[in-house]
Image (tube, rainbow, N blue to C red; front, side, top):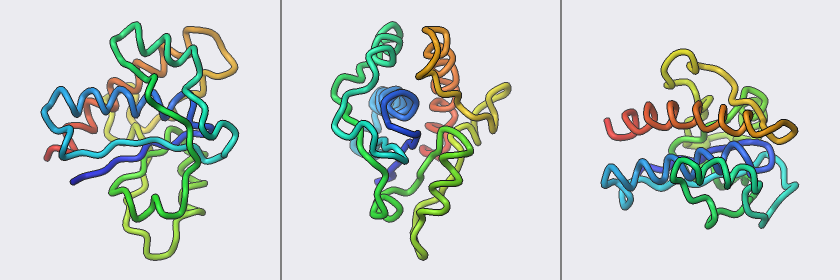
Length: 155
């Protein structure tokens, strides 16, 4: 089984969006039993909380259900439990690299590393302090990145 962990700051906006979108794409591709999907935050600000209500609303407008998700903090064990840890921005990637235990088996990368232009290798912006347009932009980037990631995971 392949496994993917999406990582942002508090695990209430960007990474749960990626989790929900990718999880649905995996299921639609008939791979639900073959690809494990989860998300976490680099910080424990919101442990046990659901995704931000604005995130949930934005995702719902495109048919994604984020209601089962709860925030959790990235743990050292995640670096062996998952094949691929994907940071939503470069700051998260730096934190993950510092946290990674020596001999960890997970590949660490920026979420948009395989996304098509214009999203390739770009940070997914944090919509938390902005308006609704920021959540829509995150969805646009996540959908494009998740489609590219699905092709990578399937190959």
